[in-house]
Length: 279
Image (cartoon, rainbow, N blue to C red; front, side, top):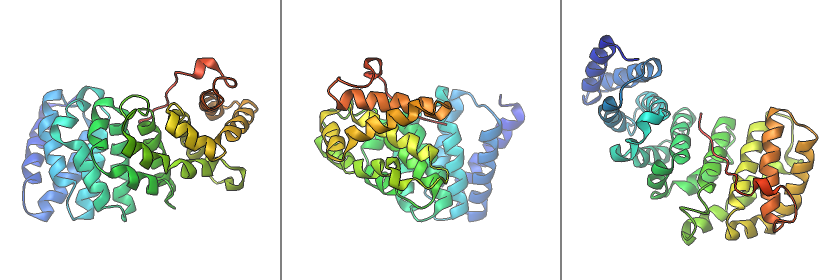
């Protein structure tokens, strides 16, 4: 819990965050990141902290941007505080900064971590979907940096979890999302396996496809790319390898198979399952 000393330090750092001096901004970003990581602040503190971080995240200084993005990522993980993120404009700021720092891996990782939590939350994801960030996330899912690609695939899984609710009639965004289907299926094909840490990428990819299969337009796109047979193969492989990750993969595979086979295969109990992630 935050102590009186924390509040005194916080007040000082908030003042520094509004300085035009780059050194003050850097100290504010670095120390706010440490402070947010080590203390729990009451809801009343979220507004001032988030506004300060939203000012720092778009900085042209890499250190300022990456540390303030890390602090924002940690801040929105708090379920008690996240409801205020929309009012503070956090989704728009994060999405804008991702476009700004898309070629800088260290900043991008922190920003995608924040975006993952924002897309997990039903209230926050609306602000995310009002931007044009989805196309960028699809590109990042193919990035050579493993952390960037895994985070982006998990973000797509979160977004797809709304395909039969928030996105049910959004034909423009559904068309954009349909374009990600071949990208998501690639890590699941046998030809893509190289044994180098592909477990998380594989899991989030099939989770995204399982979520997407709940929408008829997206289900058709998956089947058109060989998704029905792929779901059968994934179910069989996962049942034969029921470790912790395998047991979760089989849930995704069975949900996907049930929907794609017009309820003739897979598990009926999986029909209503959604797979969403934040960490």
